[in-house]
Length: 258
Image (cartoon, rainbow, N blue to C red):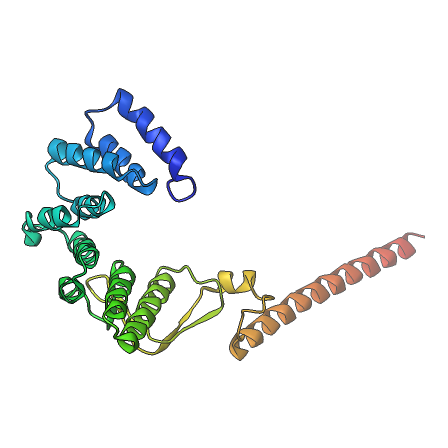
């Protein structure tokens, strides 16, 4: 609901908070929906309440970004530096780096904004769930620095990562999806970036077989389908012959009886 109608989602969250205000997930939901509708002051208040109730720093990136939203990038940096990043999950650590980089940009510190994004997870050869946003953030900073060619390259990598993740998740809607740089999912859940194609399951291909987006049908598939059709036709002919023979036999019996 928050993606389709954030205002409605926020109204529901506020209603829930009136009856379950001491439940951490409820306060967290109010904060997230408040952020979505641009009420950064409320988001900050609810995020701090959520952290106080649960003791969790999982929403730290949103706290930093909300401080930016109310016009306090200095305070945003303080919030981000107050937590040992090694205690955070990888995805939260990446989101925090992006938020901290944004705060640096707010202060006109483009060079330091780029430094905030110099993290091990910024690997252009592998795609994780956070990679598209991380690569795009890097592209934005490089563009701010006037390094336009590098910015374009990182934006291209962001698009490739997004396509690779979609393809790996089975989101593709064509028989053959050609992704410029994609290979296999590794043990850590990342997608190795290399040249290749991602085939879609047969049932998905059949459902879109007439669409213009389908690039080709493999000859082997066509042959197998023809064989199946031929078998079906043969079965029908055999049954028809059996019925005919049975009718002839009945006619003979009737003639003998006369």
